[in-house]
Image (cartoon, rainbow, N blue to C red; front, top):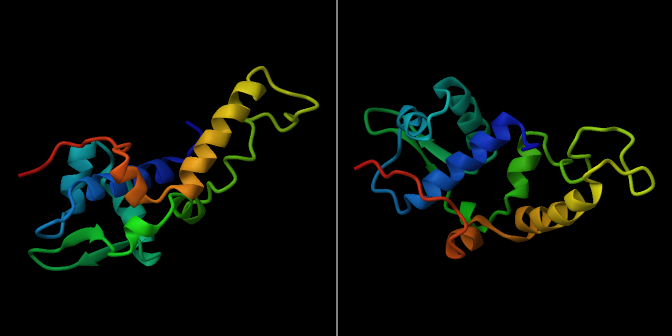
Length: 144
C-alpha cells in the first residue's frame, strides 16, 4: 500500500492490542513482534511514538509491556497517519506521479479516486471502537 512501514506497523499493533482487550496484563513488544512477524526494533520505535502520543501506555519491570490507553477506542485511525507523517496519503497519486490530477490523470486515477474516498471515510470517520464493533479488524493469533 502507500502507507509507510511505521504507519503499517502502528495500525497492526493497535489492532493486535484491541483484539486482545481487555488484557489481564501488559504485553511485551518482543511477543507482539513475534506474533505479527515484524522487526522487533522497528516495532519498538513505533510503540515508543504511540506511547509519546498517548495512544499506548507502558509499564516497566518483570510484568511490564504495552497496552492501549483507555481512550484509544475513541480515536480515529487518522491520528496514526498524522503521527507517522502519512496524513497526506489521500492527496497523493497512488502511482507516485507528481503531475497526476483530474486534468492529467494517471492510468488508475478514477479507480483510486473511488477507493480513496472510501478509505478516507474509514480513517477519518471511524474510530478504533467502531472498527472493532464492525468486526473489520483482522483476528490475530492469541497468546495464552
